[in-house]
Each structure stands twice: as C-alpha cells, then as structure tokens.
Length: 348
Image (cartoon, rainbow, N blue to C red; front, side, top):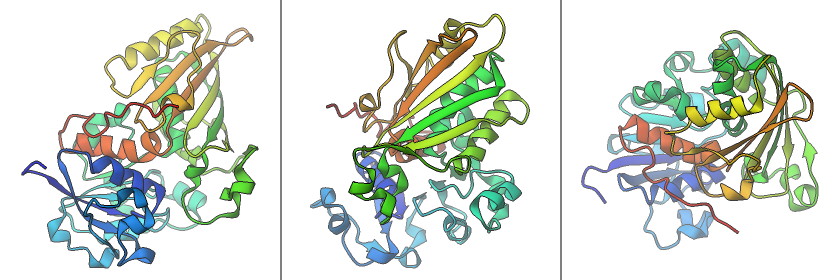
C-alpha cells in the first residue's frame, strides 16, 4: 500500500454496486478502505454479507452516522435513489464524492421531480455536480468535487450516439433504442420480479415509455445534438446475472454511410482505453466484457436504405456503475485512468 493512500469510504457496501466497488478498490494501489456502511447490516463483517471478502481484514459495517469523516478523503455513494441527496448534503466539504445513484444526474430539477416523484432535496449541490460520462466530460470531472456517475443504460447508449450526433451524421429525431440488461441491474433488494422463477428462462420489456433513464439519455444526447431531442427507448430484462446490450437504430443523413459512422467512432475513441470499436462485421457480445470496464461497439448497415444499426455492450455493474465510478475517481485525483481497472473479461 502506498504511503500516500487515498482513504475511501463506501456507503451502501451491502448492495451489488457496493460489493463491486469494494472488489475493485481492494486492488487499487492508491486506495485504502477505511469505512463501509450498511445500516441494516451494521455491526457485521462484510464477509457475512459477501463471503468472497473473507479473510481480508476489512472494516466492519457501520451506519453512516458512525463514520469518522476526519479520516476519510473520498466517498463512493452506492445508496438507493432518492436517499442520497440528504446524505451527501450532510457530508463535510473536504470530501470528494462519486455518487452512483440517479440523484444528481438530471440538471433540470423540475424534470427530476417529475420522474422521481419528489422535489430535489439538495438543489445547491445539483448546481456543482458534474455528469460523469468520463470519455465525454473528462475535463469537468477532473475539477469536480461531486460527480454524478451515469446510469448503465445511458452509458451504453450515449457512448455510441454522442459522436455521431456531434458530427451531424444521423437524424436526431429518429433514434430507436432497444436495450437489454442482466438482473443485477435491479439491485439486491428482494423484489418479486428478480426472483429466479420470475426472471429465468424468459425475457420481457419493462418501464415501457416510463423508464427513468429516458430523460437522462435525452439530456446528454440533446447536448450533442445542440437542441432538445426525444428518443424511443425501451429496456428489457434478460435472464443473466450481469451484462447489457443496447441495439440502436438510426437514420443517416443524406450522403452518409454506415462506414462513415464507423470511421467517426474509430477516430473518436482511438485513444480511449475502455471503448473499443469491434472489427467490421462482428457483433459485440456481453460475455466479452463481463467483469471489465470496457464498452464494445459494432456498426452495421441496415437492409433498409439510409438506415444503420449500432450495437453497444457493457457490464452493467462495471462500466455501467462501479467500474466507471473508479474511472471517475482516478480522473478526479489525477491518476492514470486505468488504475485498478485492468481486468480482462471473465470468459467463459
């Protein structure tokens, strides 16, 4: 452990994203984990919740009120949506914070109230929050104290679409997104729809026309398009633990080909360590990014003239949550962006 270790607390360590964060930072050469919180499990060892951490000598789980913030430099907040605002508002100003909830992602507070069912409880903090899609907002993240880590679906959609909208190569008013996620995206709380018999051996759409990631996707894509846009977005639940595939259907501008779209993405991400454009004719697969912070993107011409298909895969717990959070943490501290994120995909 480096003598100049950054002292980190993980709030909500008993959830899937909290456990994934812990897995990552335990092998991060600049991090020392000093606090783990989980209110309902307070007093227990993290190994009683996640046995994979047995024998590592980690701090016991405590309530948030029990944390000594004078001994903490940075916080990963993996708490449920709607509960994070007041918690972060009560934290000392010296802390750098990466929030994995949706509480600070939407800039428009009226839009937040519409989609999350209550007024925003920390509007002043919203003003300073930086949206943490690292590849697109790296310079802002580097100067931020509070980073709003993007949602999993938005990450998988924004990475392939933003460069194409910025280049004016696709029709911003004709974007259809068919996205599929593993069951871990629903979190670890007991829910009927997440039970084995409910999720296994089948698939279904959910949040149809009403999923909260819709306005988040549109907010950032509107920035790229230079005007407000609306997309057709439908998520689906897949019977797998982790992984996400977004199939995106676009109309190209006159004179633009699928090869042009691919060339734009190749150029835009040539120096990005975590975004790969797969070889022409190859369809990216979720299994090839499992356990990594990678996003693989494929581009195909549609048989319908003037249209193209984009396929984007990520691990929803990694690039869609905890991996991207560590990536943002690295940028905030001026560390190599890949530090602690060098994993190769788990396959098979």
